[in-house]
Image (cartoon, rainbow, N blue to C red; front, side, top):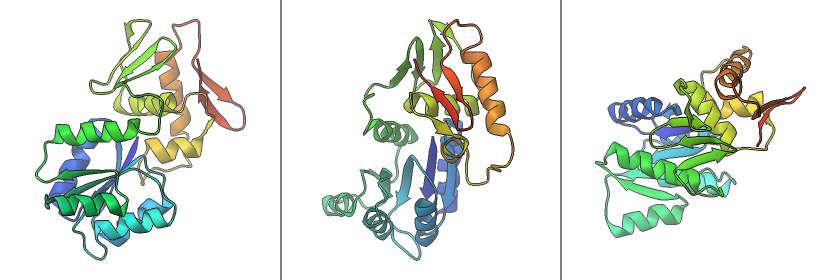
Length: 222
């Protein structure tokens, strides 16, 4: 899944980006509010992690403009302010959750997973399609009880498919959610990774989950 992190403290931003990438997320960074707003308005993100105190535009201004513009991407607000009124202002501005600095990275991850579960039927920490199971906290993947070893990008791609089971996903959809801002969409990388994934998820099983929709893209269905 693809996350936008808007944080002006570059060491903190780098720490968050590195940690999220280690958890198989694709991450874009912005260091001030106007840049964050531009990226959020012009790209498709699954979560936005947004600091309150930012140059040019505050986090509160950014999230308000996003909501006023119809962007419904879940926002996790980060702030050093921990008073009740600060939290209320953040939530009232349109953010979905609030995390006070300093924070434990495991809590950040847990809150991100919780936000990803909102708006979906799947409320468990496991995603399931047919006999395929993805355990989100551990990144363990099994099919019919058999362990499947995936690279970080293969895992991200499979998670996107599973969260959108039954939906036809174009290459553009996949690029926007699984790869970051620097991805070259004119390569055949997406098709290569889908082939990798098929070899691991479908090859040794009679029932195939990943299907090609000719001229459109791919879909995963049970």
